Length: 534
Image (cartoon, rainbow, N blue to C red; front, side, top):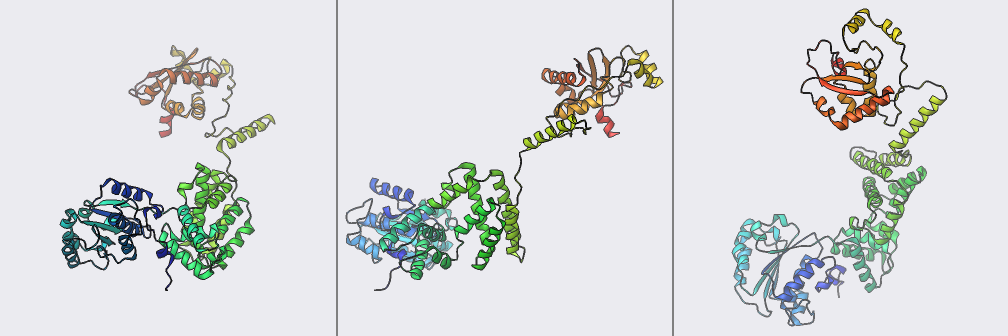
């Protein structure tokens, strides 16, 4: 007898065998149990996830001699005929080969006749999206109001190509890609029944090669068994399938974390010697570091990764040994390297340089720690008697500026221009140019610069102010009429902060008063913002 491949030998024969599609199985079983079975179904999904198998199981459940039943018995003549594909009342049509309107007209003529042996006549059209527009139009009326003894089951991998007029007449079921742990569990059951010795890691490689398709995974397993026999080693699976051994990915990531440059170069050498595609290996590394990053960020990543339990445990172990910020940098380097490989003739060199760069990355220090170190260094320099440079504008923790030494009033008056001194005598209150007994107004630019460092928002508002007069315990500044800066500063909270800053800077209580002045006020000096534009 000819050999029957595993994909056909282990094809699901009841709803319980449809692994990974429980949402479809449960809905169809409930519909049969309650007698609410639609006249047309549309099964959509990727290849090899169970669409056609589900259609046959549904046909058996509807026509079983002990039913309709939620599960076919697979023992009566009706179930046996459908399983073997010889049932005259279950017509399977390949949509890719019967695309014309004449084929649909023949189907419409066949619909009129009652079933020969079974309870219902069922039409299963695979790859229905391949039908022509004329064929779809010819099917519309029959699909909308078929005879009570007829059921339609359509299957397609590309539902977007099916006309909306067809979709609206069917109950749609979307078949999902089967998760890797589910595929591995099913493969483990099958190899145990077949008497094959194979590890979980090898089954994971086979399942990953199937990319969510059970049929593809079984076909790959058939190929592995043909090569290895009943005893399968991990090395044979890697050599046969040409997939990247996950042990290399784990070893590469661990070597990066251990800063082992020599080991990384040996891994690249082994990848090249084994004939792996360098760019594909880099893509696998990107995915591996992605999973480590996600594990570090959220912990449990079972729903984000197609990995077996053992592989998830490895990812979790590695994630505990590295910081999240460093993982971001590693992923960025790998993504750039993978992009560069598309435009270079030296992919091995690009990968080597990327891995070496990752291994030699200097750990990132938090910004707050850097600022604390700068403050400590500044304090040490000041304590040693050395003159330190002014604190840069980006520091936030610097101490307030010390009160500048104030020369005697006589010395101050002597240093002023004669004209300014005369003007000061003629005015009732001391102006900015004439300090008198106060240096508040004369040190206005320094005060604004210090406030910009301590409170950037208040400092930016003060740059638009004109220093007017300085009297005992008060400093008066003016703003243009309808000034936004005046409105923003003229609030109790902002004024309180401003007075507090003035007290710290000048070393005594100062009340800052705000007023509006016209732009043509001759005695009012220019603001700092105006000086910058001149």
